[in-house]
Image (cartoon, rainbow, N blue to C red; front, side):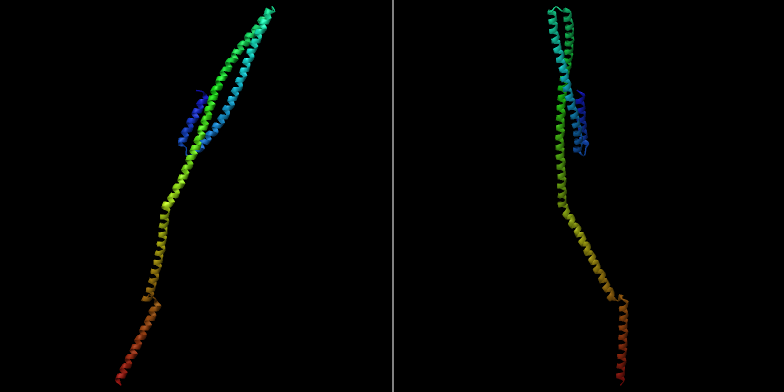
Length: 231
């Protein structure tokens, strides 16, 4: 397993672990997607560099192969011309070009294999990004559903429990008002009874004056009666 894939697996595993504990999964996913976008940009840049490097290796391989074939042809012409020494020199360059072509051909094949692996991992990274982005939409939809259900239950609770509580408070208030009114009435009634039952000093004085007056009038009438009897 390449380091790139290993890092991707660690990142995905870490995300799943944090999602299970997070109270705000959408925000966590947004952070993960931001990091993944950056990784995608870097990976695509690396991919382009690898492609460019492979193209350079291929070009050097083809150039060395072309040089090899050219030196072989030149050696053949030199040998035909009787210039054996020159033919040997050209054949030496031909062998060097051939060795170089083999080396660059091997490097080119390795680069092509690396490009294939990197492309596979890049496609997997893009698939992971899309999967997580889809999860974000799913969690966002779930959170919206939960929010709407909370609002629905809150309204239902007000409808079911709010009216009884409201009338209960109104009943208590009216009862308090009635109790207050009865208290005032009883106080006033007690005041009137107290006023008319002699509790008022002014009234008591008037009553005493009337009693004295009645006594005086009664005495005078008695004396008049006795006087008339004596006559």
